[in-house]
Image (cartoon, rainbow, N blue to C red; front, side, top):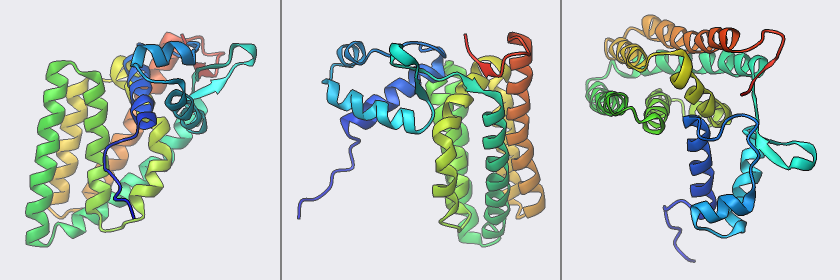
Length: 233
């Protein structure tokens, strides 16, 4: 049997490149996505682009627009809030469980080492103004909390929503929230986990998620006609 390689496939690389461009604002909501142009720009054949587009459509990041074909999907405010509500519950549970895990000395040292490394990388991304890295490190922090929670089902359950929320986070970082405050909140969550304070860790995690959703909603109301129900340029 042939050994599997850990490298991402071309389709996965195309997927990530397109999501990065959406997160950064290089591809704005409503932008028409031409597969031939994307393939040429990324230096790949059409097949991995087609595969990536299928995944992006399944994750609600692009959608069909009649004869125009695929476009970058506008952000729907109601769907965003619904997904953030689910994520808040998952993150609160993960932080509580992680705090309970941290009462063990070996686990606490491991959590502190990995958590502080992610905090350092996140702050470096903010200092560099690298939006793609900011989003990646933000996802890495929350994924880390799921992993150290001790519940192996939390990560896969949350992942169902992270595909969509990753591009939402790009919108938050670009318009609605100053980057450093996000990492101050992450630091506070990690501190509560390392203190073994499950109640405080869970509360801070839930407040962090709801705060991001509220900031995006506030930004939506100031940048767009309240009569509209989607975030589009």
